Length: 200
Image (tube, rainbow, N blue to C red; front, side, top):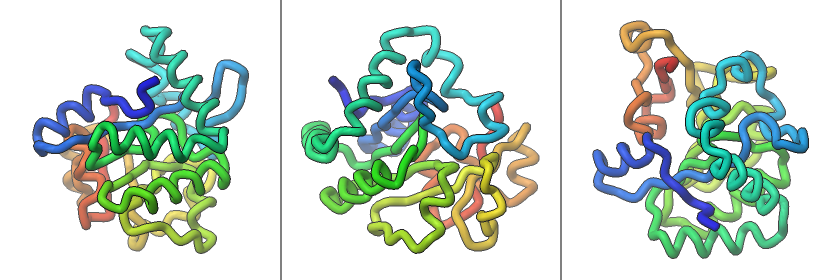
């Protein structure tokens, strides 16, 4: 099983930045059996990109995400992910181009994976803001972007926290002072805490 893959945006960003960027995916919002993978999702469920396009047109992609979700619950997940990272010589890993940190236990596995791979930059957009606010210590190579549209948006301090906001147009995004990460995913982890994405 390929634990780390590349969607179209990752491939494009890899080429533009001459580096190796991969993503890890689990089912968007919930599994086929009804297990919630995005526990704090709110309005975004209505327009979630990960529930459309290739994710639903190609059943094998959905099946692979289901398997990754099941694997993420096992004790062997950390070791298997570490092996995959080394084998693919990944430089950047986006955690969840679909799905989210569905539990603290699962999040802590990624914290350990980041600690085990200090030469790799890990980053994730998340609506599981509550898991991070209460003093969780993250390794420096794990970058988190709070994604607006959650049940707990009130926890986001837009002047302090790196966060993402969706705009209807790139003009509106720029006028609001956000960096456009719509096409180049690595812009999400620059020093600019305001990350913008154009709705598509």
